[in-house]
Image 1 (spheres, rainbow, N blue to C red):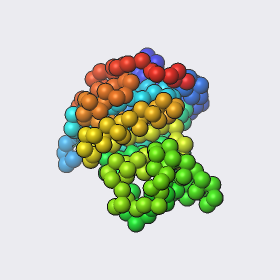
Image 2 (image 1 turned 135 degrees about the horizontal axis):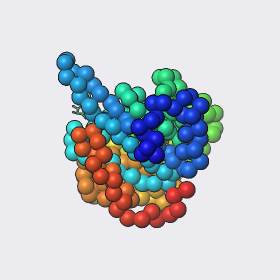
Image 3 (image 1 turned 60 degrees about the vertical axis):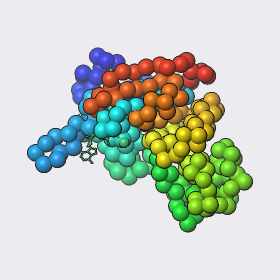
Image 4 (image 1 turned 90 degrees about the vertical axis):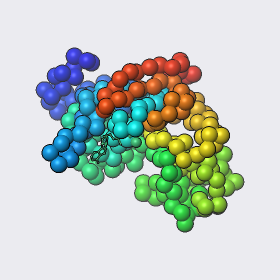
Length: 260
Ligand SMILES: Nc1ncnc2c1ncn2[C@@H]1O[C@H](COP(=O)(O)OP(=O)(O)O)[C@@H](O)[C@H]1O
Ligand SMILES: [Mg+2]
């Protein structure tokens, strides 16, 4: 594959599709080839992500760790299909996301990715249940099925008894669990979390990390973005990022379950 990266620009459309099929067959959910994101600031070029090659398989629990400004959020936005790279290829579940137009990107994002953010991003006026239901409304699911699935997702994070509560009637940890239920309700291929414990005290943060561990054991693929080593240690593999590059890719402990 390393050899391939240098000749990727020469692949025609059919070869790119075949490569996607091959990755999918191998259970690769995320694969980037020489991925770049460059921002132009005045006459300065900032390479926020510069030549990243990452492969993540189904069922993995991976932390992307690096200091502030190292490019974590930019990389997460690329992986999460919120942004497109300046250069390079990105395959999500065998589909070449780096070549997609906005509407197609929005569709694959809704289908394949569940986001969890530091600040929860819940609708303040809506109940926990309605917050979790929202992605299903966008996906065009009938109201009865929506209700059932939202309830199940809240059950999976132990919040069913609080489902009629609004965010301001919930603790920080409970709000984050609502956000995690919302991220899971579409049964995405990956759960993508950017500093999910950043706004929580350490006891509550540990409780959320325990929940991620359980979701991983249940078969979810998790990518966790953090600058904190003790948060990253919960993952089974840590990709260290510095200056927009992969500095080190470290397996911290063996997978608890078979990854495919
Ligand atoms: N929209 C943007 N425009 C210009 N520069 C940006 C933009 N977003 C991020 N950067 C720069 O890219 C680098 C990486 O930022 P970021 O991905 O936010 O890092 P991290 O999440 O690791 O703190 C930083 O130098 C930052 O200033
Ligand atoms: Mg960041």
